[in-house]
Length: 290
Ligand SMILES: Nc1ncnc2c1ncn2[C@@H]1O[C@H](COP(=O)(O)OP(=O)(O)O)[C@@H](O)[C@H]1O
Ligand SMILES: [Mg+2]
Image (cartoon, rainbow, N blue to C red; front, side, top):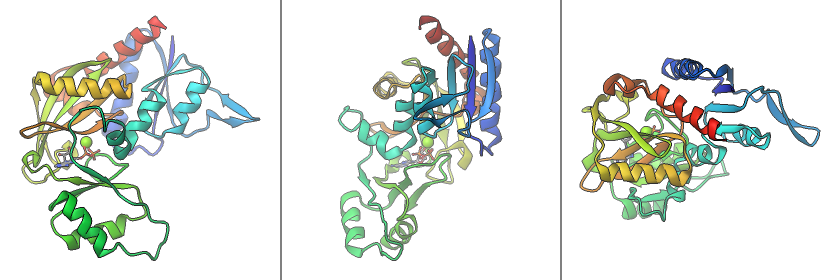
């Protein structure tokens, strides 16, 4: 069996590059012939009214978030882990919330940020007042596309919010109720093939964002059943083979986001679980059943 591991060509985080190597190792250990390739669009593209594909592989392990390449690969008959549809839903935080909106999964109150097509336009005071009335202050604002907590903001005042939205107005973003009980802490849960594999608590005493990249400390945790059920439900509804679900903690745990391309190094280090091996085994099992 042959597999191709695709990763983002602009990848600059060493942790993401090590992930590519780890997956290659674990797939190879199962007797799978693996090639790794930057996902630069040169091996699957539109040509002569069809899709041309140069990849010599039975499946693709997609360690990127771009949404169209996996669609083209699936058109060519390749099994892609995660599927194009699942990657697309997770890549956009707003789409994830909208997709799961009527699932019964608790999520923070969320407003869709309006898109701006006029460079001279100003965010109006009336708009700021309306969103503050709906969600209160402080308020969380997130760009729809982002990772490592870098595109997630907490606004304390109407002024800060107005300045931020003025800056973000040309990008897709969402506004969200700040879940204050979850300040600097959340639970990251890895789900593979519809089962919870492991989980960790992430705690950051200096920042509301509990990403490891923002300085959070990670510790292994046994995922309580109600949180495990929630994560599995989200993963199954979206159709994910592999994901890392972020859960905000409080009286009622709430789904924060679902990462289709979740890093697993910190998880492996603190839980001792071989996440890469579990994902590789899941892929091999799916391919054998095909
Ligand atoms: N609504 C919220 N209330 C409180 N904290 C939040 C909220 N949304 C996100 N956070 C915090 O910010 C972190 C990063 O947000 P997340 O949506 O997971 O973005 P990223 O993709 O950058 O990790 C979360 O892990 C959590 O600690
Ligand atoms: Mg996150």
